[in-house]
Length: 175
Image 1 (cartoon, rainbow, N blue to C red):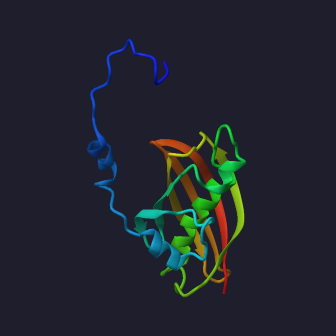
Image 2: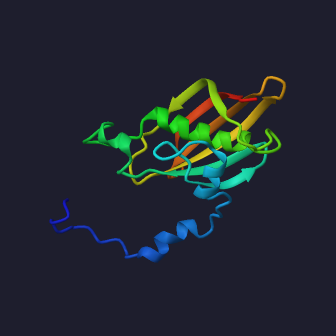
Image 3: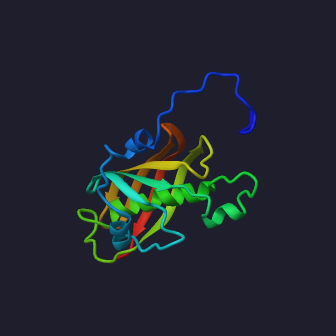
């Protein structure tokens, strides 16, 4: 069926914009995009965390990346079927991990940088496309203060379905 063909099925009851907008009503934003930009060194088009909805200092965080069709990667990946590149999903998750590492109690929170040092056990489960909200969760598994090395794990979901899992991220904090 196309938009111009009449449907033979009973139409679903009309819900309206107000009900669809309620999905965000009970989700608190604990870190806005502006607050994130004060912690992470990344900027457009490479700041990939739009907001944080849960945060436990030094332990874990849940953040959201809203995927839009006007992002530069979609002009080439792929023009007829835009799909968020897997490496950018990983980068978005790493940035969420950076929000944990670049604040007390892990670091002083004063302009330090963190660098990707490794990644293990990546599994992509479903594509992420424009219009999706990539909901990411990162957990600090361990931190070696002497070496400035952090180990994390993470998962990301779209619509309640797993999109990507990572068994281990390794990060190095600058001294």
